[in-house]
Image (cartoon, rainbow, N blue to C red; front, side, top):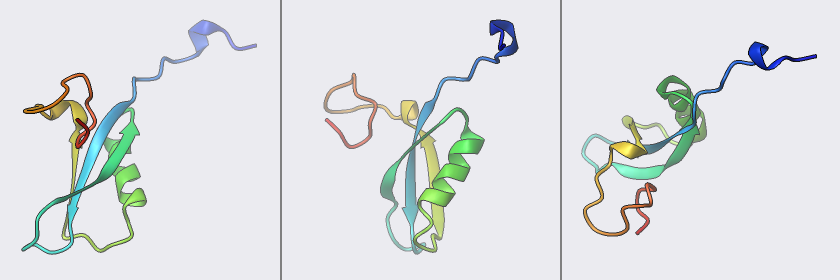
Length: 81
C-alpha cells in the first residue's frame, strides 16, 4: 500500500519554447514547445524531438520569460494572439 507521505510531490510542468537555426547566417526559427518539470529535462526533450536537422544553434526559453507586446496577455504560448 502506498502512503501519501511516501509519494514525492512532482514539480509543476513548465512550458519551454524551442528555437533553432541551421546555419549561423540565418534567423532563429520557432520550432515548437516542450513541457518538462525542469530545464535539464526540457533540454533532453528538445534535443530528441527536434533532431531532424543538424542545428548550428538550438535555444530553449521558458515561455514565461516572454513579454507580450501585442495581443492577449493571458495566453503564454508564443505566436498565438
